Image (cartoon, rainbow, N blue to C red):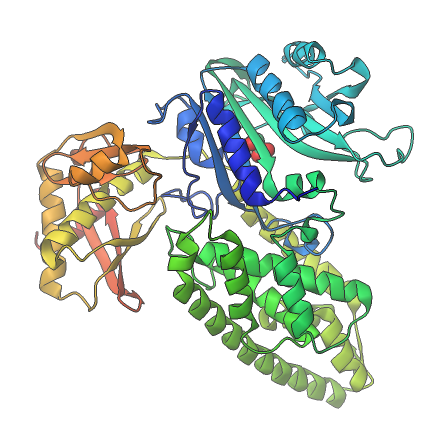
Length: 607
Ligand code: SER
């Protein structure tokens, strides 16, 4: 039987939900649009949070899409048969439209009629009720009506069958998860969906957002009932085709084959497999991040940039174990681009940037590793002088964390000198570090919905800045990246040279003039072509015919954008540029603030 490819699955899924009255929308950028609370898009619902909270979506109340997601919380687990740092999520959405009956019936229809799963293979879980919230009898009744017998409907608690809120407050609700029984023997009498033994594989999650969690921690029924579903592309094609691991699909196989062809160091089987998978996974994710249409994430030391750096360096480290040649990152990127170009044509357009960033980071890291070896030698000499023979866990962890030395490498080098490494101490230091970065990862999970008012105003300031730059420097100025924290905006734009003091002053004055004019900010919905024809600045890649939102600021600016925005420019109070610098070749970067601090700084400058 012909294999089901990712291209075919995406197409099948979107068309199915289109036939059920859904509008196909473009997935969002994997780098969140003006959302300072997250580093990457982690779920399909993520870019849709404002609409789940009640804002009107331009494409209507039934939507379907494919969302690129990056999750690096489990990066250390990559290398097993299932963990990935990048995946695509297929989703269908009801924004106050249909609810449980339709969502469940369509999930069932798609799984059994289109993907060809035998209804006998299907087990489901539902929320069993906890505290004030009753058992999800409605979902149970829906499954029974479709012929799923009671013994294959498992009622479970909050840990398993509750989703959200995305932040500390907001929409949330019970979910029903669908599992395919692989036919393996149960591992014991307790074995069931959610058991880790591999008998049951989760394939789809339908979330019913019917509650709002208040700041007091109570759950109030929501006026707008939403459905949010998520089905992973990689896992689904793996199961349909009967693959043992996700790495057997066409999304990974060409990468693995190339790695094997380039390998020059023999490793024990289990180590080899793990190294190959890590390289394939990390290079795929790095290529997708660098090739994202929003752009702006490069290997670096903080936030999303650091995640990207870590992915590339981990891949390089394992590539060294296998003895892959210098420049292998470019080879890997070309394979990833070839695999995804049909669905994400922007990868081809960004090929040059992807390859140059990857190879630059690869060679920077090679240098760091050499420095690490020097560091090791220094430690070894001092230890020998003091007659010590055990490298402390802290030192071993520093070599790992700062120079990318795997523990095994430190152990090998130590052994060559008749020394040992305090492995327990290393593991303890690593655990401590993991705890700290988990707290950092909290950023991912917490506050998806936190579009604070200040952030919203900074977003409006970004539109004013973009237009003012075009007025002063010329129409060649285009947004290359935007990043907003609660304190400041950062805006990257194309311009070949450093801006002069006069130009900066002019731009700042123009923006302040618009703030003083107290211009209203309005929003309209129209097809992308109409928006472009009306002269709106449009950055992102939207599908032909897709409805988009156009934000107009008085007579000054018009931009295609998802929002949200301030209602009036007067809310910004004042605007002050803090810095103008180079971001990369042909791209400049401005950091600016608004509000009272901006006003004070302008006054101090005699404005
Ligand atoms: N938000 C849910 C999930 O991430 C369903 O899309 O699983």
